[in-house]
Image (cartoon, rainbow, N blue to C red; front, top):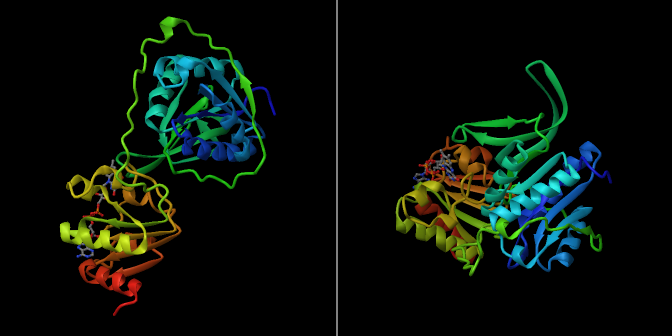
Amino acid sequence: MNETGNVMVFIEADDDGIVDVSRELICEAGKLAERLGVGVEGVALGNGRTAALAKLGEYGCQRVFYTEDARLAQFTAVPYAKTIAATIRRYQPRIVLYGATTTGRAVAPRVASELRCGLTADCTALDIGDCTIKGVDYADSLLQIRPAFGGNIIATIVSPDSNPSMATVREGVMKITAPRDGATAEVIAEPLELGDDDFPTTVLETTRKRRAVDLKSARIIVAAGMGVADAEGLELCRRLADTLGGVLGASRAVVDAGLLVKDHQVGQTGTTVRPNLYIACGISGSIQHMAGMKESQRIIAVNSDPEAPILKLAHYGIVGDLHEVLPKMIRAYKGQN
Ligand code: FAD
């Protein structure tokens, strides 16, 4: 692979190991790198992660620049940003991708500021293409695609003069491809070029709050919209989810109404999901909701309005009152009349 000009991914880890979004981005980086005829590399920081980083080779990562130090075991923004910026200066990738996680959102703007380069936040798609700006042609730019103006338009953002082009990408948006068993990435030890002053904070303790529901790995999601009307309607959705062995999702309107906590929210500002089956109950199908579930393998929509936009996206639409339809679905699944 080339020494410079590759596609780089910031590899994020927590107590459970490397987080899914880093694998998602390695797979996406592979597609971009193929278009550009370059390689895929990672930048990682931490302590005792060499074996896990090498395994990223299974997803197409060729090498990982790893800065190891006990003080980097827990994420803190200043040393992470400075070290990533130093690695980028050394290896000059043309593209750098970060997960739009709490960590990614804290570190990427600091790196952008350190390197004086552009950063596009919360991308939902990436591509390579040519563009012309003020009469100047640019070939093979990173096309950074994301909803803008409250989700009313999809904007394609380019920063062709920025070196590198950097973007954060929401979790669950990019697909993880099947791993190639046994392939390994070369893990290259990088020096820690920081003094004590670069560690202005010390993490004494970390506490993790468990999510109320794990939407990302659910195979079946029954999602409740404002059509449920009240706690009784919501209970019907919960019963259908339990009957099918699925979990309960929700539109933002339901969360804003205080019927469910935000962990249940699907969509642009909630979780992006791609289950085997998504049953939308009383959900109209706003662009912001569909952005988070349109990749589901099968979509069933139950809605009393035959013109509801969700019915155009759904593979199967049931026009009717969910208070009548859902009990029938539950009974049918249980084999009762
Ligand atoms: P409604 O739009 O009110 O739809 C209710 C539906 O229920 C209607 O289609 C109606 O026909 C149907 N209905 C009514 N009664 C019944 C019945 N008895 N039986 C069957 N059907 C019935 N939304 C999200 O969901 N996720 C997001 O992440 C998100 N992010 C956003 C980000 C921004 C910046 C903005 C501006 C908005 C965002 N929204 C998001 C909000 C979004 O625009 C919609 O307001 C929201 O999705 C609407 O929720 P809903 O479909 O439940 O409600």
